[in-house]
Image 1 (cartoon, rainbow over the protein chains, first blue to last red):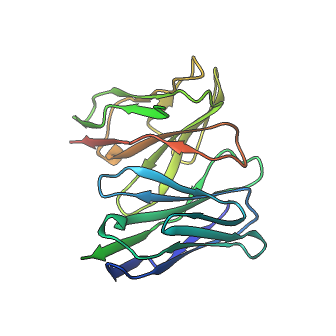
Image 2: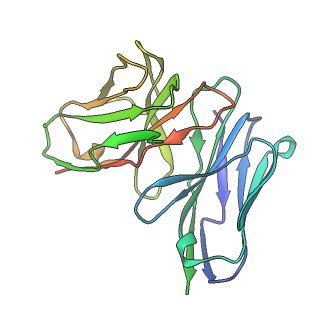
Length: 109
Length: 113
């Protein structure tokens, strides 16, 4: 099956800083999603981005499918951005998403 | 829109007890999934369904059962709960298998003591 690696595993920022989270995957995909798991455990859909670039406010994401990686950019971070960011991928007619282990982001005031 | 709704949000079970985790979606999605998340890990697939009456095993199905009698509902049954089933359970749905966005419920935090 597809392997998913996320980096870094942990990241500590001061409020206002920018960050880049990376997701590498081992095979071609037709589904790639970024999620934010907040401190209450909820999984929030951030981006559905199997290829290309999308932006939503302070967050943006880019997937380069041919090189098998995706990047999540967080600008002007806020304390509410804290939590775990997951990348999940799916390939072909595969029914499931394979999740990475996540990046734990802590934004300090 | 409600999206994917899970109940209950929290539950404590004693070893050997049984329970059903409920999941409903109102997006008319064909595919539904149950995942579990253990501490510090990503999610692993327990069971999935491609439509009413059709279910199949995922990566970690042992100790669980599912049914899908309607498009909207996909309950997960735990028989003879064990401490190894202490986890957070997420239900999800998508329109089809590949190439479409999956939507997740709020999760059920289950503790088996």
